[in-house]
Image (cartoon, rainbow, N blue to C red; front, side, top):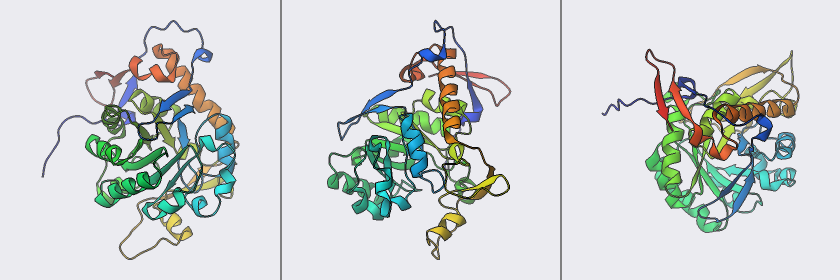
Amino acid sequence: MLIKEEIKLDYSDVLIRPKRSTMSSRGEVCLSRTHKFLWSTKEWTGIPVMSANMDTVGTPSMHKVLSDHKMITCPARHFLRDGVEKFKDGKNHVCWFGGIDEISHLSTVSSAFIGLDVANGYTIRFVDAVKKLREKCPNATIAAGNVVTGDMTQELILAGADIVKVGIGPGSVCTTRIKTGIGYPQLSAVIECADAAHGLNAHIIADGGCNSSGDIVKAFAGGADFVMIGGMLAGHDECEGVVENGVMEFYGMASESAMNKHNNHNSYRGAEGKTVKIPHRGKADDTVKDILSGIRSACTYVGANSLRTLSKCTTFVRVNNTHNTIYEH
């Protein structure tokens, strides 16, 4: 047994200190980024915010909205087996995720990214699956996760991942931390995994824990190359589900609701997600515009004229303690 005593932080534990800026308007901020990937050697350009590959938000209708803004949709997993054609328009802004047993399906789709998505990215079986997918799709841009530490980030990259998905337990409908006691504060996970990935010329996705545009800003400021959101996109007209009494259902993909829908029960697996009712929010386009406006505004507060330079302009201030502490990033 070991105890690591160094401070680890979630998004709620910090704010970003404002700095003098020569910018006159948030309209001057460029949110588009161009990333070139280690193994595929391909380039992608767009706004690197993506929908989670969850039943209720990874829908064709959500993809239409996000692709109009040059953002990425990760379709819900069931579309991989029956519904790939529903995402054929705007395929440069689609990332298909599947499980270890879905490598053959992933190898047949045409999109900007493909990826392997499991709750626990620390198993040897998962590392071997990443190697297998890279061998099967040598020219694909591959994402893999989830992990929360630098050592495993590097191992997945060396196994063939261009992008590593970072986050265990921070999602709003994930109960892994409660059920298992496993996890890692998300901001620290992003900072440490980004440092590990960037040292190998690879990239990361900050997955989970964003409850506002300010949290998305903190993820990018911490070094994330992409940020994945789920709950922030739930409850809209474009989501799967029925509006009843002004609310819609939103559930984690390890929840009882998801296991019932996809007949994914077995004797050794319990639920590690929950189902919640959230207010109906109308059109997703309004929410997306509000999110992008918040990111642009943050850039003006620190003098970053582009999303690319945001992390270089960031000073985090720790706020959830007695003595405020400043962290230069």
